[in-house]
Image (cartoon, rainbow, N blue to C red):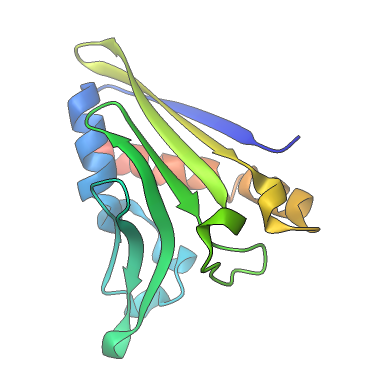
Length: 153
């Protein structure tokens, strides 16, 4: 097993779900899941292929924790997850795992959001423990539920 998959259903349009995921990222991502914690100024995902996923903290602290690989407006987003199993940044995106989020319309007012986190083997020998952590109640499930709460406001 080298990947995990999570999904949630939102009672909003695909366009709104996509928009809230990206532009609201700073509002729904849990500060405890950043390096800056309570000092976090901003966390964001770039809006085009090749752009960065970045955290801005106190006193000019900046860390790039991902690279956008593909983005299709209102449809999908893929980015390299450049955070190692030891919570250290991975500068080389080729040694990172991949997160893909798709926004599938069920109807005009309901969307299934599917998140796949794959290529865990890229994180090295401890990849299985990392996969289990991200697959736990405190991993993507927790984060997607925070996103769902935010998106449904």
